[in-house]
Length: 314
Length: 273
Image (cartoon, rainbow over all chains, first blue to last red):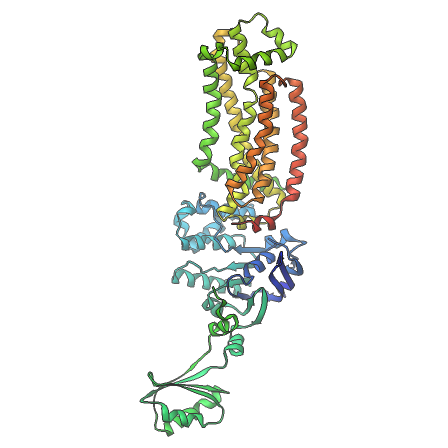
């Protein structure tokens, strides 16, 4: 069952088309990444799906509710981490959490305080609960904003750059949390991010957006293969690889052989790396090449992304 | 509209305001000047009361236009008593309509524009609270402190006036029906109209200063009332006050319906700086 469905979702601001006929669906428990350069339309898409702004054309449903007709139900269903932490600096961490917990319908004070304590403890903020949010570091504010998005246990989470401003340890904690929410609790997560590392590690599927339109949708692996090409066999040799390279080039199934003379490496692109690797190794040995190591280098999502969005990344 | 959600917005904003001295100071200091310094000046500075200046010209005009009932009450009073009575009970009355406007304009201008400036608006608008609940919460948080300040100012003014004039008149001048209607009827209805408009302006502009500059225009009708009363053209009496309370109450109801109808999350977000 789809938790988020968008059909021809379009948003225009005057003559500018910020989002151009996006059609996609996100299944229950799926982590779906929105990737794209600044101004690609990611935040506008999340705002439409969160019933903050209305689409100019097209439709969308979140948790089974129409984003225009059932805006209030959509907002109840969704937990949202906005581009900015959006915290009240003069209120303490606990007061911020209390306000949003009540706004999202956690009416029972006991249930509310238990939930808030759980979240603040998870994010290592419990000891600072009485401090004003304005005194927090950027990373602490980001953690508090994520805790706020989770306070009502939403079915669907929209997270705009969740690991922005966090140290490596906190980033890992957030990634682990997202995985747990998705895999164990079957929460659906829409993740807008610049961090390809996050998308690669977490997302079941990603959609790359450019100038408001969808360029491609697929799993990170699919995108890597489709756009950045097949994995490459990397062979490190003792001595110059020139003669050995000729021997490998002569093999059937070899697409390209790149020689990196200074580091004595051969980069071999193969039609079927798994089937052809033993033959390549035999050819190298036959040409009296001394192999130091053999490895497969997978094309990264970053390569795929950069090929699609080119130099637009801001 | 769920009153619990309206109160939730109110409580949140009130907590923020109560920790912000930049907002609290002007709200508290200006009324104090009105309520203590001005009556003290009128009573304790005889040269001001007796001066044959333009102010006495104003007072003479005012005296002429006072209702016959009030004129009868002035009969037999000394000139100094008449001046003090008219100045303190009639001349300064419209200032008490300016106090709630000034107090509320700071908070109401900040209502949505301040949230935009501090970049807290998006998370607020993403909550499942209706447009009406958000709008009314913001109106309430401007209204309650401004009326609190007005009522406390009136209490201080009453105490100051009675303390300073008891010796002169041998009786307490305040409170009277005129002032009770003014403070408990006209001031709240006028304040609500001004707050409703200011919150609407605040939702439509980018920043607090812009909202405050535009909403400053709303003091003009009250200044007109002030000059009308000072010149004797209009004198606040129970009848006029009753009519104004009714007129402003109708205006308030219309403004709130309009405010909720014009409240657009999208437009508010599009003006985030």
